[in-house]
Length: 117
Image (tube, rainbow, N blue to C red; front, side):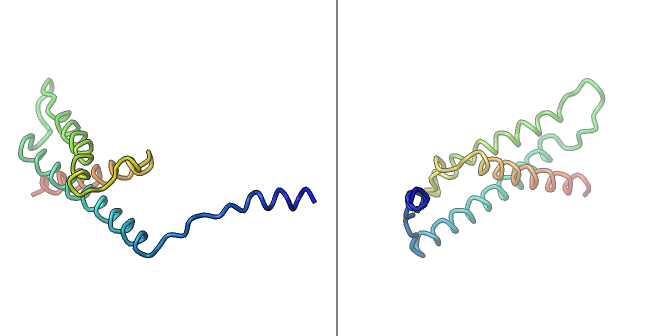
């Protein structure tokens, strides 16, 4: 009898999501990914234009500017989300890590490609 009571307490009904809610969540994820990718490419391009080649003589710390630009663009995503009416307060640490990683990846790739031209 006690097992039946324990089992019935664990069966909590979860709200069923409508297809419209699922589509909205999917489009928000696509927008977030696209924003991270575009901002990463823009950050890499800005680093190339401002810094250029980082193999400078010792004593000049221009390479750190690239990392600061990257961090600024990761933080700037929050304000881009406001423009697209994406609720960024629902994003957890895992989501922000994903946003930062996508921005970092495309920043690194675009800057590297521009340096090899």
